Amino acid sequence: MEPATRQLRELKGLPPNLERLYKQVIEAYNYKLDLLVFAGSRMILEGICDDLEIPSGKPGGRKLFLAERLDLLNESRLKLLAGVFDPVLRCCNLAVHDRQVEDGTGDVDFCIDAAETALQMLYRK
Image 1 (tube, rainbow, N blue to C red):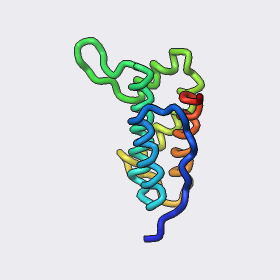
Image 2: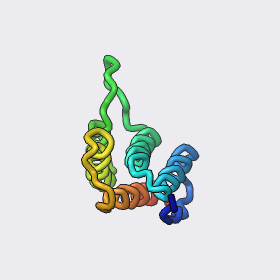
Image 3: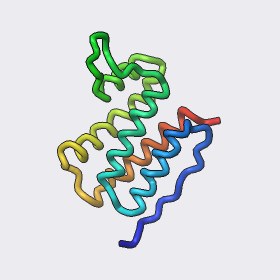
Image 4: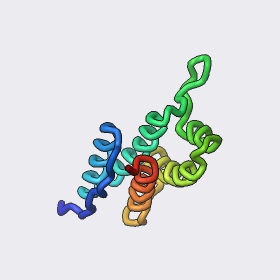
């Protein structure tokens, strides 16, 4: 299989775990492994929430879904970022959970573009 070509953006100041995830998402894209791109893009959102210390659980031990964590993000000073995350989460969930995204629709590019935008907004130095 001939890989597609998408270059890594030069994103400075990323935490090591997010930098590694981002590189893996781009590599998956270049090998046309769309499902891994969607799952990896979603993991980038989770990683950003972790890095921003958005709670991942509620008292009593129930783990929050990513959408609930994004709601908390929406309530914070980062509303603009939540606006970037919401459509990405919807797209990734359709692909990963419902397998409803067709190849070649541009959804993969959309998810990567949005993840790169979020990383750039947060970790710009």
